[in-house]
Every structure is written in C-alpha cells, then in structure tokens.
Image (cartoon, rainbow, N blue to C red):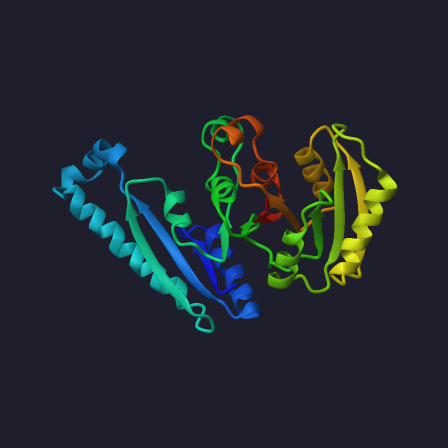
Length: 275
C-alpha cells in the first residue's frame, strides 16, 4: 500500500482518522491524500440566498469564501504531521460525496464515522457504509475519536473460505501485542461442523504466525448480529472482515454484512473486498 486516502470534513472523528492514517503511513512508508469534498448546494440555493442575500453577498462569493476557509483548515491540519507526506485535495462537486472519494483509487481508505440508524440508514445509510460497499480497496472505518488506535482485542470474522483480509490487516495495521479472536458465526442456515471449523481457524492462526489467539463459534440469528454481539461482549477494539462489495439489485435484496457491521459497531472496522 503506497497511497492512503483520508476523506475529511474537519470534524473530530475525521481528524482522528487522519491521525490513524499517519501512524499507518509511517509503518508502511506510504503517502496520504487528504480529501475535502465540497458538494455545491444546488438543492439549497434558496437557503444560501436567505443566509447571504441580506448582506449583499452573492452565492458565488459565499461559495468562494467557503473554499478559502477550507484551504486554511487543510493547511493547519497538515502542518501537525510534518513527518509524513500529505497532499491536500479540495474538490468541488454537484454530485454525491462518495463518488469523489472513490475516484481517487487509493490503496487504503481511512475515514471516520458515527454510523447511521433507523430512518436515515434505511433510505441513505452513512457515507462510510457506502464507501465500504463501493470501494475496491481496503477501508478502515474509525469509530472512536478519543482513544489512541492501538487495538488490543481484534476480531477476525471468518467464513473459513476468504482469508486475504486477514493478511491485509496484519501487514498494514498496528496490531502488535494484540489478542486475536477468530470468530465463525453459525446463523442456522447451513450445517456447521464445529470441530472442523475450529481446526480451520487454528490453521489460519498458524499460517499467519499469530500467537495470542482465541477461537469461537458463535450462534446468532444473522451473521452481522453474531459479529456485533460477540465484538460487544468481548469489548473488541477492531473488527476485521471481508466484503463482497455488492451493488445494484443484489445489494438491495441481500444487503451487505460488512455495511451493517460498519454502521452499528461500537469499535473500528477494517474491510477488504474479496470475491
């Protein structure tokens, strides 16, 4: 991984994502592109007129001032991390934020998220959920803006078929001295040979030379419920999993386990697209 993309809106959680990306960049000798996307408010022109019109400021002038402020904020933020090469990107678009993020074809995306619930999730979802679904590279979603990103309990959500996501996490994330939990969820939709499943998890740990490991087959109504419930019960710091990156009609009917986990997990989530 040579290019890490960090989308930012200068919020506390976005700033934390940049901090984490800097630590990863130092570990793997990568560069960072810090992206701030300004979506031109075509649907809110009336609101802009009401906000700026009374003072005689045009919408174009107001928009220009927004971009100037963004450049200043970006410069101040980058100045905090002189030890890493960070490129500033401020983009204007009338389209959706996510398309601008995905256009940059990064090797890793690190972004902050507070998730989404209820009505908003059903109709829109969170930006991070959509990035996870659409991205062709690994995505690390940071959920905690306060604590340092030094995961002590890491949950590998395994289906015993896909495993590239484990390798990607081990090679690129700061997981030194972590306790690794290999988790296989039994949702009752298929026959699970518990002895065979546990043996396969042991082999995965051996393959990647992981020592401090636990192995769990967890019963739950759905795969995502099992991952979330287990991670919560174990007070996990990070969930690592793969995603199919479904789009279109398949996504509408089947959904994505990774998207649901990203939205609802209390801890950070690392995903990697695998077919």
